[in-house]
Image (cartoon, rainbow, N blue to C red):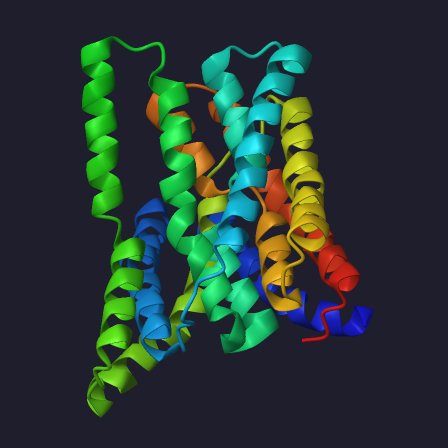
Length: 313
């Protein structure tokens, strides 16, 4: 079993490491890394999401308990981490928000999608994309409210409106929504278009992993290491354990849906934690260090999660 898990995980993180090395030794400059990221996140991943939703067999009734269970854990964990960061590390609300967000928001797009599809195949498309489609909708408003809490009312309204427009224009949500619409309408895509979409979909996984590694190479791991390690433990160990307990013993979900949720919960800190820190100029060293450290540690923790879940590929 251990050999099977290593065979699944090693190539995935191997591509991430290659991207990190390429960025670190400057085989790619910042402009090149930015270009790859734009291709992945603005073109390849949205088209992958669209094509996957076109092909999937949609159920008559969606398991809403799955979403409620996962995000009940995520929001509850956000509140706990927010409180703990203030008590233990003395963080003020905005820094505490960075700590809490990092502890509960995973790297779904660049790492979660290729990881889950590689492990579970197309049968995991629905449980995977249900969470991919909703993570930003659920978690971003909470984080935004925490960060704008101290701003002037007028400025706060402006920022919230800007955020709302960003969510509406989100390319991932657009890909999922359009793919679902085409699926529900029963429209058959032209063969030539299917061929194009398949090529984009095939490129999305390796490019996303490589872009993630290259992007991480640009972050400096300095300062706030104690708090960063705490975030790492909470995000990659404690949070997935909580999700497993709730979905397994309280909601008693199907094993596939349970496994997908736990693997997604075990993902490292999402890059959006760093982007929020940069945007609001708070906790930047904490966000950068926790993103890099948790990604490195997750190579081990995700392997352990897969062993405990009995995943055999």
